[in-house]
Image (cartoon, rainbow, N blue to C red; front, side, top):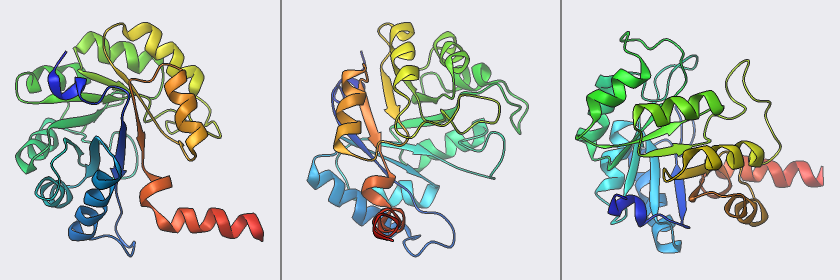
Length: 223
């Protein structure tokens, strides 16, 4: 196994992302949050956008999983080969790609994109269902993740917490390929449950790095 991936076994990856219009939407802010997460024990950072990738890569010593979101529908997580290579240039150690079979803007299939990137970077496949997992394994991806479970129309229903059943099935099918659990890990109990269900590593974003959502949880709880 690649040494970088091996270093993430049993560890926490923190997703540091903010979007247009949000108060924290600034590369320097994201870099500060990423550094704080590193000091807290994060083994890697997941982040989106070229400016954020570059700023975070310059601030932390741990690996950076980069992606570039463009658009709001269909394939918008690193949708083309051009986006992926731009993430590499910005400093990504691993590039995350949407692993669904939906059409991509450049006309390439998921497999063609992965094959083009072979030797240039490690590839993390963001999956929504087992069909995506099998597609990722066939393409030779380095990491499989449950990132899109519950977020693709016509796919798996959205669970309240991490989709542990999907995780278990993916881990059983993946063999030696590591499966990361990402999506709706909001508590330490969720984190432990994901590891117990077979996750190689877990990715936590909102519960650590999105104060607006966290504040809303507390405000709604006492309303």
